[in-house]
Image (cartoon, rainbow, N blue to C red):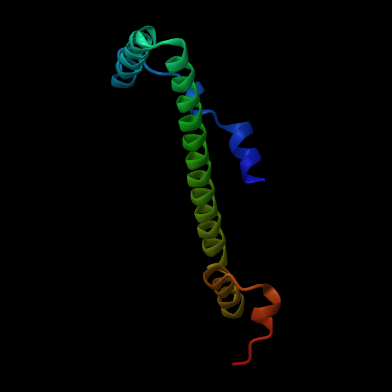
Length: 113
């Protein structure tokens, strides 16, 4: 579910870049240097370079997805805890235990105090 939300809703590479910004200058420099370097490579080296870039992009995409999932999970937990502030103490305690321990509902309901 979170992966679908990430993939379908957000595209960091498609975001607009301000003209004259530091990001635009870095992107132009990167593109220029990449083209110069690729022109110096043999066909075999170029093929290996492309494979390396593809692998790097996959790792970066997976890292971004994992960071998004962690941030999303934290935000949901905080929203739940905030909503619980108006609930009776027993429900607050139950949900806090669920969130903090990772126990299943049945495990927590089976606790004897």
